[in-house]
Image (cartoon, rainbow, N blue to C red; front, side, top):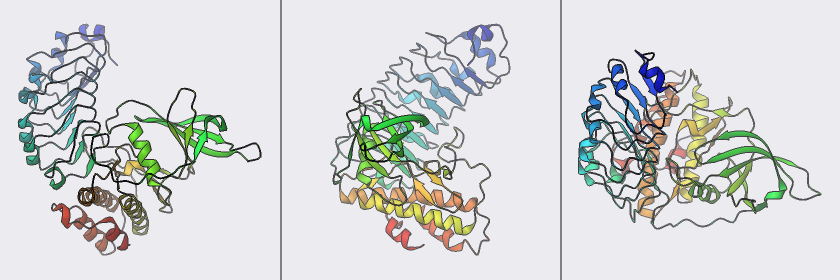
Length: 427
Protein backbone atom coordinates (compact mmCIF):
# COMPACT_ATOMS: atom_id res chain seq x y z
CA UNK A 1 0.00 0.00 0.00
CA UNK A 2 1.30 3.45 -0.95
CA UNK A 3 0.33 6.83 0.41
CA UNK A 4 -0.98 9.89 -1.33
CA UNK A 5 1.62 11.96 0.53
CA UNK A 6 4.50 9.91 -0.89
CA UNK A 7 3.03 10.16 -4.39
CA UNK A 8 2.72 13.95 -4.12
CA UNK A 9 6.22 14.27 -2.66
CA UNK A 10 7.70 12.46 -5.68
CA UNK A 11 8.94 9.54 -3.56
CA UNK A 12 7.38 6.92 -5.86
CA UNK A 13 9.18 7.90 -9.05
CA UNK A 14 9.92 4.96 -11.31
CA UNK A 15 7.64 2.40 -9.62
CA UNK A 16 5.84 -0.14 -11.80
CA UNK A 17 3.01 -0.93 -9.36
CA UNK A 18 0.92 1.57 -7.39
CA UNK A 19 -1.69 0.64 -4.78
CA UNK A 20 -3.65 3.62 -3.53
CA UNK A 21 -6.62 3.39 -1.15
CA UNK A 22 -7.15 6.83 0.38
CA UNK A 23 -10.89 7.52 0.18
CA UNK A 24 -10.31 9.04 -3.25
CA UNK A 25 -13.20 10.59 -5.16
CA UNK A 26 -11.02 11.45 -8.15
CA UNK A 27 -7.71 10.27 -9.56
CA UNK A 28 -4.80 12.39 -8.31
CA UNK A 29 -3.07 14.23 -11.14
CA UNK A 30 0.31 13.22 -9.67
CA UNK A 31 -0.27 9.65 -10.88
CA UNK A 32 0.62 10.85 -14.36
CA UNK A 33 4.15 11.59 -13.15
CA UNK A 34 4.55 7.78 -13.26
CA UNK A 35 3.54 7.56 -16.94
CA UNK A 36 6.92 6.19 -18.05
CA UNK A 37 6.98 3.30 -15.55
CA UNK A 38 3.54 2.41 -14.17
CA UNK A 39 2.23 -0.99 -15.29
CA UNK A 40 -0.12 -2.04 -12.46
CA UNK A 41 -2.58 0.40 -10.85
CA UNK A 42 -4.74 -0.73 -7.92
CA UNK A 43 -7.41 1.81 -6.92
CA UNK A 44 -9.69 -0.61 -5.08
CA UNK A 45 -11.62 0.55 -2.05
CA UNK A 46 -12.02 4.24 -2.83
CA UNK A 47 -15.03 6.45 -3.74
CA UNK A 48 -14.32 6.75 -7.46
CA UNK A 49 -17.18 7.05 -9.93
CA UNK A 50 -15.12 7.94 -13.02
CA UNK A 51 -11.57 8.04 -14.35
CA UNK A 52 -9.94 10.86 -16.34
CA UNK A 53 -10.48 10.88 -20.11
CA UNK A 54 -6.72 11.01 -20.66
CA UNK A 55 -5.93 7.85 -18.65
CA UNK A 56 -4.09 6.63 -21.76
CA UNK A 57 -1.25 8.96 -20.77
CA UNK A 58 -0.23 6.05 -18.53
CA UNK A 59 1.13 4.48 -21.68
CA UNK A 60 2.65 1.40 -20.00
CA UNK A 61 -0.49 0.54 -18.00
CA UNK A 62 -1.27 -3.17 -18.31
CA UNK A 63 -3.33 -4.06 -15.22
CA UNK A 64 -6.06 -2.00 -13.54
CA UNK A 65 -7.96 -2.86 -10.34
CA UNK A 66 -10.90 -0.64 -9.40
CA UNK A 67 -12.97 -2.98 -7.24
CA UNK A 68 -15.20 -1.71 -4.42
CA UNK A 69 -15.75 1.74 -5.90
CA UNK A 70 -19.22 3.17 -6.70
CA UNK A 71 -18.77 3.21 -10.49
CA UNK A 72 -22.08 2.86 -12.35
CA UNK A 73 -20.47 2.83 -15.79
CA UNK A 74 -17.29 1.17 -17.01
CA UNK A 75 -15.09 4.16 -17.96
CA UNK A 76 -14.81 4.71 -21.70
CA UNK A 77 -11.24 5.97 -21.29
CA UNK A 78 -10.10 2.33 -20.79
CA UNK A 79 -10.63 1.71 -24.48
CA UNK A 80 -7.77 4.06 -25.37
CA UNK A 81 -5.21 2.28 -23.15
CA UNK A 82 -3.27 0.33 -25.77
CA UNK A 83 -1.41 -2.08 -23.44
CA UNK A 84 -4.17 -2.63 -20.86
CA UNK A 85 -4.96 -6.37 -20.77
CA UNK A 86 -6.49 -6.87 -17.29
CA UNK A 87 -9.52 -4.85 -16.17
CA UNK A 88 -11.02 -5.57 -12.73
CA UNK A 89 -14.15 -3.77 -11.47
CA UNK A 90 -15.53 -6.21 -8.93
CA UNK A 91 -18.26 -5.24 -6.43
CA UNK A 92 -18.95 -1.80 -7.86
CA UNK A 93 -22.41 -0.66 -8.98
CA UNK A 94 -21.86 -0.93 -12.71
CA UNK A 95 -24.98 -0.98 -14.86
CA UNK A 96 -23.56 0.16 -18.19
CA UNK A 97 -20.63 -1.32 -20.16
CA UNK A 98 -20.01 0.93 -23.18
CA UNK A 99 -18.41 -0.52 -26.29
CA UNK A 100 -15.74 2.19 -26.13
CA UNK A 101 -14.64 0.99 -22.67
CA UNK A 102 -13.10 -2.23 -24.02
CA UNK A 103 -9.32 -1.92 -24.53
CA UNK A 104 -7.82 -3.45 -27.70
CA UNK A 105 -5.45 -5.81 -25.81
CA UNK A 106 -8.07 -7.08 -23.32
CA UNK A 107 -7.38 -10.61 -22.05
CA UNK A 108 -9.14 -10.63 -18.65
CA UNK A 109 -12.35 -8.76 -17.84
CA UNK A 110 -13.59 -9.04 -14.24
CA UNK A 111 -17.03 -7.49 -13.62
CA UNK A 112 -18.18 -9.79 -10.80
CA UNK A 113 -20.93 -8.60 -8.42
CA UNK A 114 -22.36 -5.60 -10.29
CA UNK A 115 -25.75 -4.72 -11.79
CA UNK A 116 -25.09 -5.40 -15.47
CA UNK A 117 -28.04 -6.47 -17.64
CA UNK A 118 -26.40 -6.39 -21.09
CA UNK A 119 -22.96 -6.39 -22.67
CA UNK A 120 -22.10 -4.60 -25.93
CA UNK A 121 -21.85 -6.50 -29.20
CA UNK A 122 -18.38 -4.97 -29.54
CA UNK A 123 -17.06 -7.46 -27.01
CA UNK A 124 -16.85 -9.86 -29.94
CA UNK A 125 -14.02 -7.70 -31.30
CA UNK A 126 -11.83 -8.48 -28.26
CA UNK A 127 -9.82 -11.12 -30.10
CA UNK A 128 -7.35 -11.62 -27.22
CA UNK A 129 -10.04 -12.26 -24.58
CA UNK A 130 -9.32 -15.38 -22.50
CA UNK A 131 -11.08 -14.80 -19.17
CA UNK A 132 -14.56 -13.31 -18.63
CA UNK A 133 -15.83 -13.01 -15.05
CA UNK A 134 -19.50 -11.97 -14.81
CA UNK A 135 -20.90 -13.80 -11.77
CA UNK A 136 -23.42 -11.91 -9.65
CA UNK A 137 -25.01 -9.62 -12.26
CA UNK A 138 -28.42 -9.42 -13.97
CA UNK A 139 -27.60 -10.89 -17.34
CA UNK A 140 -30.23 -12.88 -19.23
CA UNK A 141 -28.07 -13.50 -22.28
CA UNK A 142 -24.62 -12.92 -23.74
CA UNK A 143 -23.94 -11.15 -27.03
CA UNK A 144 -23.70 -13.72 -29.82
CA UNK A 145 -20.71 -11.80 -31.12
CA UNK A 146 -18.76 -13.29 -28.19
CA UNK A 147 -18.54 -16.48 -30.26
CA UNK A 148 -15.88 -14.68 -32.33
CA UNK A 149 -13.56 -14.64 -29.29
CA UNK A 150 -11.85 -17.87 -30.26
CA UNK A 151 -9.30 -17.68 -27.42
CA UNK A 152 -11.93 -17.48 -24.66
CA UNK A 153 -11.15 -20.21 -22.12
CA UNK A 154 -12.76 -19.26 -18.81
CA UNK A 155 -16.31 -17.91 -18.38
CA UNK A 156 -18.10 -17.20 -15.10
CA UNK A 157 -21.82 -16.41 -15.47
CA UNK A 158 -23.09 -17.84 -12.16
CA UNK A 159 -25.79 -16.03 -10.17
CA UNK A 160 -27.38 -14.17 -13.09
CA UNK A 161 -30.73 -14.61 -14.85
CA UNK A 162 -29.96 -17.12 -17.61
CA UNK A 163 -32.83 -19.45 -18.44
CA UNK A 164 -30.67 -21.49 -20.82
CA UNK A 165 -27.03 -21.75 -21.80
CA UNK A 166 -26.34 -20.47 -25.32
CA UNK A 167 -25.61 -23.30 -27.75
CA UNK A 168 -22.80 -21.31 -29.38
CA UNK A 169 -21.10 -20.92 -25.98
CA UNK A 170 -21.01 -24.69 -25.56
CA UNK A 171 -19.33 -25.01 -28.96
CA UNK A 172 -16.49 -22.54 -28.40
CA UNK A 173 -13.20 -24.26 -29.30
CA UNK A 174 -11.03 -23.03 -26.41
CA UNK A 175 -13.58 -22.95 -23.58
CA UNK A 176 -12.41 -25.15 -20.69
CA UNK A 177 -13.74 -23.62 -17.45
CA UNK A 178 -17.42 -22.65 -17.21
CA UNK A 179 -19.35 -21.67 -14.05
CA UNK A 180 -23.12 -21.14 -14.29
CA UNK A 181 -24.76 -22.19 -10.99
CA UNK A 182 -27.37 -19.93 -9.41
CA UNK A 183 -29.31 -19.24 -12.64
CA UNK A 184 -32.97 -20.19 -13.25
CA UNK A 185 -32.00 -23.24 -15.33
CA UNK A 186 -33.41 -26.72 -15.13
CA UNK A 187 -31.64 -28.98 -12.63
CA UNK A 188 -31.71 -32.74 -13.16
CA UNK A 189 -29.49 -33.87 -10.29
CA UNK A 190 -30.75 -36.25 -7.61
CA UNK A 191 -30.64 -34.97 -4.03
CA UNK A 192 -28.35 -37.15 -1.92
CA UNK A 193 -29.18 -37.70 1.78
CA UNK A 194 -26.46 -36.47 4.14
CA UNK A 195 -25.87 -36.82 7.85
CA UNK A 196 -26.84 -33.80 9.95
CA UNK A 197 -24.17 -32.94 12.54
CA UNK A 198 -25.30 -30.71 15.45
CA UNK A 199 -22.99 -27.76 16.04
CA UNK A 200 -22.42 -28.58 19.76
CA UNK A 201 -20.72 -31.86 18.71
CA UNK A 202 -17.87 -29.86 17.11
CA UNK A 203 -14.92 -28.23 18.88
CA UNK A 204 -13.14 -25.85 16.51
CA UNK A 205 -9.35 -25.60 16.50
CA UNK A 206 -6.84 -23.90 14.22
CA UNK A 207 -7.68 -22.30 10.87
CA UNK A 208 -6.42 -24.43 7.98
CA UNK A 209 -7.28 -22.02 5.19
CA UNK A 210 -9.62 -19.33 3.96
CA UNK A 211 -10.92 -18.73 0.47
CA UNK A 212 -13.53 -16.60 -1.22
CA UNK A 213 -16.33 -18.99 -0.27
CA UNK A 214 -15.51 -19.73 3.35
CA UNK A 215 -13.14 -20.61 6.18
CA UNK A 216 -11.80 -24.12 6.84
CA UNK A 217 -10.82 -25.05 10.40
CA UNK A 218 -9.53 -28.18 12.02
CA UNK A 219 -12.00 -29.51 14.59
CA UNK A 220 -12.83 -32.43 16.80
CA UNK A 221 -16.15 -34.14 16.30
CA UNK A 222 -17.68 -36.21 19.07
CA UNK A 223 -20.97 -37.72 17.94
CA UNK A 224 -22.06 -38.70 21.46
CA UNK A 225 -20.69 -39.10 24.98
CA UNK A 226 -19.66 -42.71 24.36
CA UNK A 227 -17.95 -42.01 21.03
CA UNK A 228 -14.28 -41.17 20.64
CA UNK A 229 -13.42 -37.75 19.22
CA UNK A 230 -12.56 -37.67 15.51
CA UNK A 231 -10.25 -35.13 13.90
CA UNK A 232 -12.13 -33.43 11.04
CA UNK A 233 -12.14 -30.29 8.92
CA UNK A 234 -15.08 -27.86 9.16
CA UNK A 235 -15.91 -25.47 6.34
CA UNK A 236 -18.21 -22.58 7.21
CA UNK A 237 -19.55 -20.84 4.12
CA UNK A 238 -19.86 -17.12 3.59
CA UNK A 239 -23.01 -15.71 2.02
CA UNK A 240 -21.25 -13.41 -0.44
CA UNK A 241 -21.10 -13.85 -4.20
CA UNK A 242 -17.60 -14.98 -5.21
CA UNK A 243 -15.95 -14.75 -8.60
CA UNK A 244 -17.18 -18.32 -9.24
CA UNK A 245 -20.71 -17.99 -7.89
CA UNK A 246 -22.59 -18.65 -4.66
CA UNK A 247 -20.98 -20.55 -1.76
CA UNK A 248 -24.33 -22.22 -1.08
CA UNK A 249 -24.33 -23.67 -4.61
CA UNK A 250 -20.86 -24.98 -3.85
CA UNK A 251 -22.14 -26.74 -0.73
CA UNK A 252 -25.01 -28.35 -2.65
CA UNK A 253 -22.58 -29.71 -5.26
CA UNK A 254 -20.26 -31.13 -2.57
CA UNK A 255 -23.19 -32.95 -1.00
CA UNK A 256 -24.52 -34.23 -4.33
CA UNK A 257 -21.09 -35.59 -5.32
CA UNK A 258 -21.26 -38.14 -2.49
CA UNK A 259 -18.31 -40.26 -1.38
CA UNK A 260 -15.61 -41.19 -3.86
CA UNK A 261 -11.94 -42.19 -3.59
CA UNK A 262 -10.52 -39.15 -5.39
CA UNK A 263 -12.74 -36.54 -3.73
CA UNK A 264 -12.30 -35.10 -0.24
CA UNK A 265 -14.86 -37.06 1.84
CA UNK A 266 -17.85 -35.08 3.14
CA UNK A 267 -18.98 -36.52 6.48
CA UNK A 268 -22.01 -34.37 7.13
CA UNK A 269 -23.78 -31.03 7.08
CA UNK A 270 -23.69 -28.67 10.07
CA UNK A 271 -26.98 -28.25 11.90
CA UNK A 272 -28.03 -25.54 14.39
CA UNK A 273 -25.11 -23.14 14.01
CA UNK A 274 -25.76 -20.29 16.50
CA UNK A 275 -25.51 -17.60 13.79
CA UNK A 276 -27.33 -19.70 11.21
CA UNK A 277 -24.16 -20.25 9.16
CA UNK A 278 -24.12 -23.09 6.65
CA UNK A 279 -21.28 -25.54 6.62
CA UNK A 280 -19.88 -29.01 6.03
CA UNK A 281 -17.83 -31.43 8.07
CA UNK A 282 -15.15 -33.12 5.97
CA UNK A 283 -12.41 -35.66 6.50
CA UNK A 284 -9.11 -34.19 7.67
CA UNK A 285 -6.57 -34.78 4.94
CA UNK A 286 -3.08 -36.05 5.79
CA UNK A 287 -0.37 -33.35 5.69
CA UNK A 288 1.50 -35.57 3.21
CA UNK A 289 -0.90 -34.15 0.61
CA UNK A 290 0.08 -30.81 -0.88
CA UNK A 291 -1.38 -28.53 -3.55
CA UNK A 292 -0.20 -29.54 -7.01
CA UNK A 293 0.32 -26.01 -8.38
CA UNK A 294 -0.26 -22.35 -7.75
CA UNK A 295 -3.22 -20.48 -9.28
CA UNK A 296 -2.75 -18.48 -12.47
CA UNK A 297 -0.97 -15.15 -12.21
CA UNK A 298 -2.30 -12.01 -13.87
CA UNK A 299 0.19 -12.58 -16.68
CA UNK A 300 -0.45 -16.32 -17.13
CA UNK A 301 -4.20 -15.52 -17.13
CA UNK A 302 -5.72 -19.00 -17.38
CA UNK A 303 -2.67 -21.17 -16.68
CA UNK A 304 -1.46 -22.47 -13.33
CA UNK A 305 2.14 -22.00 -12.29
CA UNK A 306 4.44 -24.80 -11.13
CA UNK A 307 7.44 -24.26 -8.84
CA UNK A 308 10.03 -26.69 -10.20
CA UNK A 309 7.75 -29.74 -9.94
CA UNK A 310 9.31 -32.88 -11.48
CA UNK A 311 7.25 -36.03 -12.00
CA UNK A 312 7.88 -39.55 -13.24
CA UNK A 313 5.70 -40.90 -16.02
CA UNK A 314 4.17 -43.45 -13.60
CA UNK A 315 3.21 -40.64 -11.20
CA UNK A 316 1.64 -38.65 -14.04
CA UNK A 317 -0.36 -41.70 -15.11
CA UNK A 318 -1.53 -42.41 -11.56
CA UNK A 319 -2.59 -38.81 -10.92
CA UNK A 320 -4.25 -38.38 -14.31
CA UNK A 321 -6.14 -41.66 -13.86
CA UNK A 322 -7.38 -40.58 -10.44
CA UNK A 323 -8.58 -37.17 -11.60
CA UNK A 324 -10.22 -38.65 -14.71
CA UNK A 325 -12.04 -41.13 -12.46
CA UNK A 326 -13.19 -38.32 -10.15
CA UNK A 327 -14.51 -36.34 -13.12
CA UNK A 328 -16.25 -39.41 -14.54
CA UNK A 329 -17.93 -39.85 -11.15
CA UNK A 330 -19.05 -36.20 -11.02
CA UNK A 331 -20.40 -36.12 -14.56
CA UNK A 332 -22.09 -39.45 -13.90
CA UNK A 333 -24.00 -37.59 -11.18
CA UNK A 334 -24.79 -34.67 -13.49
CA UNK A 335 -22.23 -32.32 -11.92
CA UNK A 336 -19.89 -30.05 -13.85
CA UNK A 337 -16.88 -29.14 -11.67
CA UNK A 338 -16.12 -25.94 -13.59
CA UNK A 339 -12.68 -25.34 -12.08
CA UNK A 340 -10.60 -28.40 -12.97
CA UNK A 341 -7.15 -27.00 -12.25
CA UNK A 342 -3.94 -28.27 -10.66
CA UNK A 343 -4.30 -25.64 -7.92
CA UNK A 344 -7.52 -27.42 -6.86
CA UNK A 345 -5.80 -30.83 -6.63
CA UNK A 346 -4.01 -32.28 -3.61
CA UNK A 347 -1.36 -34.93 -4.25
CA UNK A 348 1.38 -36.89 -2.55
CA UNK A 349 4.62 -38.32 -3.90
CA UNK A 350 3.00 -41.71 -4.45
CA UNK A 351 0.75 -40.11 -7.05
CA UNK A 352 -2.45 -40.24 -4.96
CA UNK A 353 -4.71 -37.32 -5.82
CA UNK A 354 -7.81 -35.57 -4.49
CA UNK A 355 -9.93 -33.08 -6.43
CA UNK A 356 -11.36 -30.26 -4.31
CA UNK A 357 -12.89 -26.76 -4.47
CA UNK A 358 -16.44 -27.00 -5.82
CA UNK A 359 -16.87 -23.22 -5.92
CA UNK A 360 -17.62 -23.22 -9.67
CA UNK A 361 -19.59 -26.48 -9.74
CA UNK A 362 -23.07 -26.66 -11.26
CA UNK A 363 -25.70 -29.26 -12.09
CA UNK A 364 -26.62 -30.28 -15.62
CA UNK A 365 -29.72 -28.45 -16.88
CA UNK A 366 -30.46 -31.43 -19.20
CA UNK A 367 -28.67 -34.47 -20.58
CA UNK A 368 -27.82 -33.03 -24.02
CA UNK A 369 -26.30 -29.91 -22.47
CA UNK A 370 -24.53 -32.18 -20.00
CA UNK A 371 -22.75 -34.06 -22.78
CA UNK A 372 -21.36 -30.77 -24.07
CA UNK A 373 -20.43 -29.59 -20.58
CA UNK A 374 -18.49 -32.81 -20.05
CA UNK A 375 -16.47 -32.28 -23.24
CA UNK A 376 -15.73 -28.68 -22.19
CA UNK A 377 -14.39 -30.04 -18.90
CA UNK A 378 -12.41 -32.64 -20.85
CA UNK A 379 -10.51 -29.78 -22.44
CA UNK A 380 -9.60 -28.57 -18.92
CA UNK A 381 -8.39 -32.11 -18.17
CA UNK A 382 -6.35 -32.08 -21.38
CA UNK A 383 -4.70 -28.80 -20.40
CA UNK A 384 -3.93 -30.25 -16.95
CA UNK A 385 -2.49 -33.42 -18.50
CA UNK A 386 -0.31 -31.31 -20.79
CA UNK A 387 1.04 -29.40 -17.79
CA UNK A 388 1.82 -32.64 -15.95
CA UNK A 389 3.63 -33.97 -18.99
CA UNK A 390 5.65 -30.76 -19.15
CA UNK A 391 6.79 -31.57 -15.60
CA UNK A 392 7.56 -35.16 -16.58
CA UNK A 393 11.04 -36.62 -16.91
CA UNK A 394 9.91 -39.34 -19.33
CA UNK A 395 11.23 -39.74 -22.84
CA UNK A 396 8.97 -38.98 -25.79
CA UNK A 397 8.48 -42.72 -26.33
CA UNK A 398 7.37 -43.38 -22.76
CA UNK A 399 4.85 -40.55 -22.84
CA UNK A 400 3.63 -41.03 -26.43
CA UNK A 401 0.28 -42.53 -25.45
CA UNK A 402 -0.39 -39.77 -22.93
CA UNK A 403 0.55 -37.11 -25.46
CA UNK A 404 -1.92 -38.53 -27.96
CA UNK A 405 -4.67 -38.64 -25.32
CA UNK A 406 -3.87 -35.05 -24.39
CA UNK A 407 -4.15 -33.96 -28.02
CA UNK A 408 -7.58 -35.59 -28.35
CA UNK A 409 -8.81 -33.88 -25.17
CA UNK A 410 -7.95 -30.34 -26.32
CA UNK A 411 -9.02 -30.55 -29.97
CA UNK A 412 -11.16 -27.66 -31.19
CA UNK A 413 -14.24 -29.72 -32.12
CA UNK A 414 -15.97 -30.05 -28.73
CA UNK A 415 -17.99 -33.19 -29.40
CA UNK A 416 -15.04 -35.05 -30.95
CA UNK A 417 -13.29 -35.08 -27.59
CA UNK A 418 -13.56 -38.29 -25.56
CA UNK A 419 -15.79 -38.47 -22.49
CA UNK A 420 -14.33 -39.09 -19.04
CA UNK A 421 -15.39 -42.73 -18.96
CA UNK A 422 -13.39 -43.35 -22.14
CA UNK A 423 -10.44 -41.39 -20.75
CA UNK A 424 -10.55 -43.45 -17.54
CA UNK A 425 -10.32 -46.65 -19.60
CA UNK A 426 -7.08 -45.37 -21.24
CA UNK A 427 -5.25 -45.90 -17.94
